[in-house]
Image 1 (tube, rainbow, N blue to C red):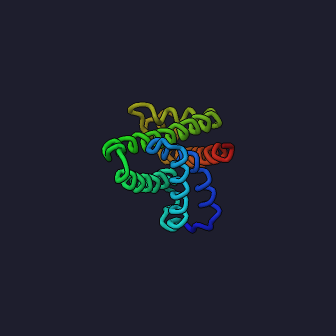
Image 2 (image 1 turned 180 degrees about the horizontal axis):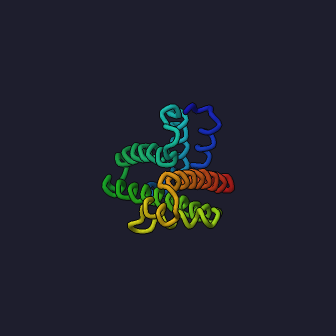
Image 3 (image 1 turned 120 degrees about the vertical axis):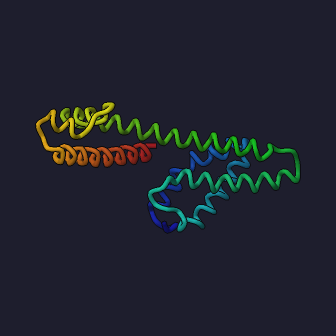
Length: 176
């Protein structure tokens, strides 16, 4: 992705809060954390071409921030006592887990909203398909339809749900 693209600028702008929060978990000095965020932003801008579109931008940005925090810690270790690397790694892992959990929760909330927007017969078809031990063959037989027909309908519903989820998440990011 090119650093001058509008999409990269949007992703970088939206990542400021999460990345700053991540840095603060590793470096509680707010002033130094702001400096580390700026250093991270510069590196992200320089390495924009290495970001793979479609992957988690915040996770990538936090990994870059992690290396800036490590470099800062090494510099500080020469000057005074700081957390050892094991503690820093633990804090980084916990923060990574929280970022992933937050993203999963947001997607789940969006899915629930999108499911509610489906026509009732589509929602019931999805619910039937994801019951334990349910199969497309059983659903088709129960509804008097062909397996191919049920499969195609489920494919279209999943595709529409995926688009709805992406639009919902994008609207949430734009709102704030």
